[in-house]
Length: 479
Image (tube, rainbow, N blue to C red; front, side, top):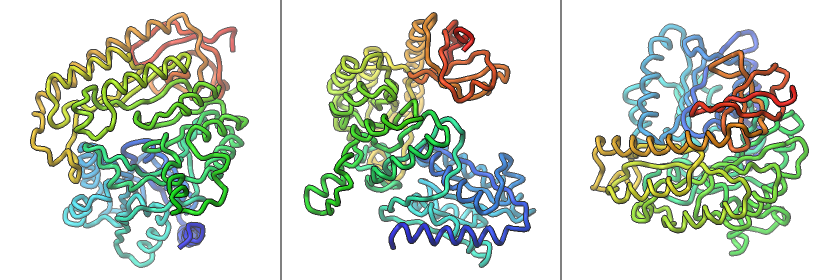
């Protein structure tokens, strides 16, 4: 079925559920686990659910509908889900709460089997490729009083036109592609998100123009591997597997997409996650350097600094290639800052391998490092490797890396003191309601005193002190 027809059907189901709920005051609660792609999926779920006349509540004990949008990258997400499901059993028995579970974890057969066996009171199970059918599934549960499982093992399509309820009014996340073709040996994502599928340029541009009209100042372009945007489609056109309709004439790569979005009035900052080092081509580097709205802060996942481990991880680059890429980027992009992901304790990691990781961290001096202790994932090659690292060693290495990273961040923070930074004001500080908070171009959190009418604007702030995970500043010239 054409995606436009499918969306039309789902909008009819939205109206059917809305009709069922017209005399009721119903609430929903949603718990999102995992990455920003999951957050974006949850925004679409919220958009559909609120059109069906549910009001959001943060207290799931008060909700008539509870949705879990799951992640399966790390084991603690499973523990969190099953703990919450246990809590919900009593609440469901009391008030008939509808429980729905979706997202990446539901693409794993051993997880859905456990839910059927241990948590039979769950009403809806849906996967990453069937999120758009939530209105239909909810309607069937409400009307037919039966449980539903709607999970596809094949690669899903891209559906345009879903309602969306964004998390805030300043920054908008926009997915540009789904899936991954890389098959890193530690990662479950290609198995649960499917192969790479890029949205059409015109649909992305339309969405960016819309959020600009709505007053959003910053956008985050999302994908498992954003710098391979349209690569599959261009290859299929070249091989004659896909018809060249001319719609990719103006935009046929990630670099050209960045340049086009940079021209859109109203948008003042453009960020993106996550690129893959092996695909970071010169044209993308040049686009970042040339485009004034594209932040000069790049998230460049390392995972390991050891060429030996990178090969085991199937990352397709070496330590030397990564460092050379960093040097090229720093030479061509003024004021570049970098953040990264690092996995500690992957199967077979020796002390020498780990020292290579520390060496890269020392040389690059990342602005931010997201550190993870390796978590085995059923269905990945890494899970089947025999030379697993003991948990005690993993934690010791993690602590050593953490100490190095924090010392570098403290040193880097000192360089900000006395400088003037352009800050996009996001709102009140969560930890101090008397202060406002925002971020620099380099994604540093800054808190400062100011009136709430500054929220949503970009202002100059002088940095006066550093506090490891945030900087403190003051307005310049009362602005």
